[in-house]
Length: 129
Image (tube, rainbow, N blue to C red):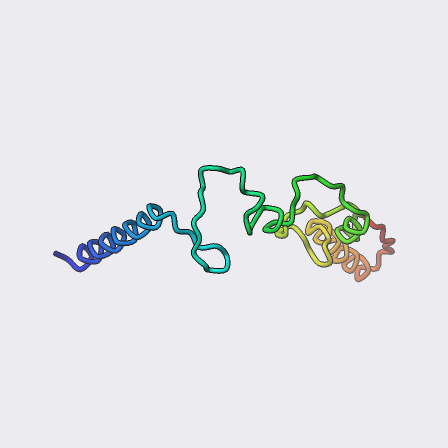
């Protein structure tokens, strides 16, 4: 038997042990709550979910009601260049100070063109996008 085959056999045996341990826990219905103390809980009845230690309200801080976004929040998430809100933009597409990455790149390209034009002696008046 090769070294790889013996390693696979060992892993399979370990998995069997883990599976039997998990099954024993399920059979005994032992669950540890967040404090680490063992307790017995039933998972078949969902009526007691609101009384659990880690309900969705506590865990995620959400009560299920959609609330309108506040002006202060939206003001924080506003692009300084175009003035549009960026609160729903993926982080990969945000530039500095919560600006759209595209706006910043266009502004940088415009600045480079202005510098080149000034170096060539052309009068340039700059306008915001």
